[in-house]
Length: 154
Image 1 (spheres, helix red, strand yellow):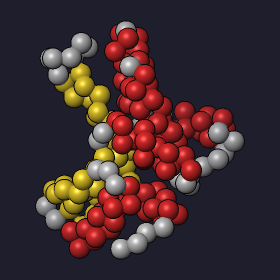
Image 2 (cartoon, helix red, strand yellow; image 1 turned 180 degrees about the vertical axis):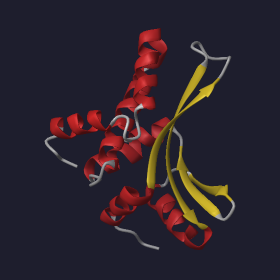
Image 3 (spheres, helix red, strand yellow; image 1 turned 45 degrees about the vertical axis):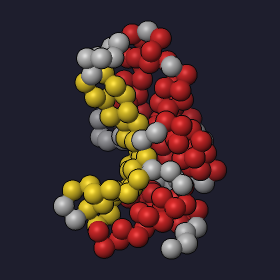
Image 4 (tube, helix red, strand yellow; image 1 turned 135 degrees about the horizontal axis):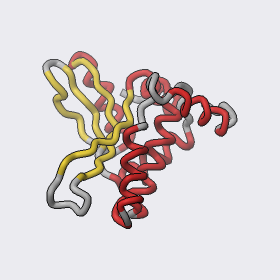
């Protein structure tokens, strides 16, 4: 299956998820691991679309999500910084997913810089960004302010 970058943008606008997991870990300095993830989930009948995304980006995996659902997942920070983020900077998302992507990008850049390891304040900053990554009714005011600061480039 050959896919076009603008098709990917539309598909991810509707079906994609930029997520940052916060996992408890006693081995780490502040007791938590921060794990960014980009995921697209589809029914097994459409697994070919997930493989097409994997083939296009050349990173990530296609795996069982649950039941008859499969997921294309990317979890590697270098893959975000070198492949996924540059793609969505060039090919802009059109919905609220754009602001979620920009928040996700900021988190990835802070992780790359080691901000979460520098101090409790740095860790807290990344944690707060992760908590507010997804746009919902509780943080929609922040979303409106971000839209204005972006010049409504969504």
